[in-house]
Amino acid sequence: MNIAPSAAAKNVQLRSWSIARKLSVRSLTLGLTLLIVTYLVLIPLFMLLYASIKSTEDKLPFESTVITLGNYTAVLTNPTMASIFLNTFLFTAGSLAVGLPLAILMAWLLERTAIPARRWIATLILVPMTIPSLLSAIAWIQLLDPRIGLINVVLRAVLGWSGDTGPFDIYTLSGMCFVQGLRLVPSAYLMIAASFRAMDPSLEEQSAMAGRGAAQTTLRITLPIMRPALLAMLIYYIIVVIESFDIPGLLGFTARIRVLSTAIYWATHSEVGLPDYGLASALGAMVLAVALLLMWIYQRLTAHQERFATITGKGYRPRQIDLGAWTAPATALCVVYVALAVVLPFLVLAWTSLQPFYAVPSADSLARVSLEGYFRIWQESTVVRALWNTMVLALVTSAATILLAVLVSWFVVRRRKAADGLSHYLATVSFLPQCVPSIVIGLAFIFVYVRFPIPIYGTLWIIALAMTTRYLAYSSRTMTSALMQVHGELEEASQMARAPWARTLRRITMPLLAPAMINVFFWVAVHAMQELSMALMLYNPETVVVSTMIWSMWQNGRTAEAAALGVILILLSALLLLGGQVFLYLRRSSDS
Image (tube, rainbow, N blue to C red):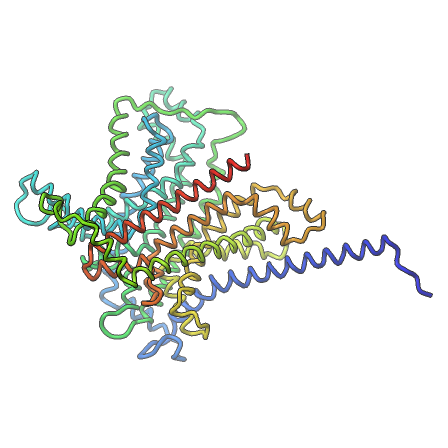
């Protein structure tokens, strides 16, 4: 006897099929996301560690079957390594000593005091982020070269300095620390300014009522309250300085001062003999271990900042401190920083690009001003190829990174209560590249694609993959923070209306995340355009980009062409950032 299913049973059956289909798509996407993140992050790091324990005598790391600790022994017994480790420590300490106190002082002045034009100055402090570190180093070479640097020439004329060199020399460890320290200020300011802005001023007011001055109040009340944020910033920027390559690469090359990042590069780009991949992999593994330890400490510190919270349910109004007679010097300090970090470097780059060879401004050099350097670079097919490759790389890296970051953030936030631990795994692995120096990522990708028969080594795509890996941490964390502010009710309503999970993500979630996605897209694009260390490790003549082209031109003494291409890169970066802000403004206007 056949009994036809009832309409209710059919509805239940259709609903179960729909749920199963949604779960299968979501599960498939989760599995694919896990696979991609693992492949991008863990496989290269595993290959780097594996290469560091393989014998490399007359062979590439993976052509030998001998497991050995000889690479580490060679590093630790090499007499030159002691100076490299010492230089790295001094360079890191010196850069932080210049940059972080200045950033903290700037944040305090602009957020806690009543100096004039605070908003304008706060905007100008961020402008140096559009100038790549490579170009900052080139500009300061033109400013503080001991013989022909503009500042040195002017000071010798004003002070009556005897001799043809000095009084300053940029080709020293202190010169490297000065330039790197200036580079740290904008991003460090962004990291610490919000803490100054949000802090309840009642404790400071009580200190003032007890007769303490502004300096004593800041040293004994404000800074101790912010200790976790300051320590976290310190540890984070230790990693940033250790991984930096552009400034040590240019200034340290002339001064013959090597740090860990440049030692890894020159080990794989030896001018005499074969590359020493054993030395490079061992150094890379040691840098990775130090960075992982520091990042673990950083996460421990940031996980317990609530113990130092001063914002509660009680209302408060932040109060700006009147500096009195110190207002003018404080404002002057901000203006001097902007001049040193933005105005002078850009002006000297523009001046250099207009000269057939670099010369300090004078009547004779003014007569030689021309746009010939700009015309010459456009006549070279290599430069045109570099510009095209750079734009393709920026767009591909940005699109791939933002798509992967959206998926990672969704599974991390929406599956937070899942018992399988996959969301925690995704959060941890996607954040791991934050503590891996760029040059180590480039080295790890060499080992992966030399070993595996995937035909992307020597193409633009390997650079795009390396950059996607490098910027995944920032992008996924930014998207995670944005998604936490979006309640899941709208997604649940869409699913109750039987919309597929992918359509809900595309039509509901992503439009709500659009502002954060746009910011991340343009941030990644600008950094991909400026990235040097990974590009230097992975490029060839066919995949040259603007940053490697500037490096090559400078190394070959083509200062005018390098400066002209640098000015173009700065303008492109500024235009891209401005375009992102305009796009966001227009979108907000259309939504309202």
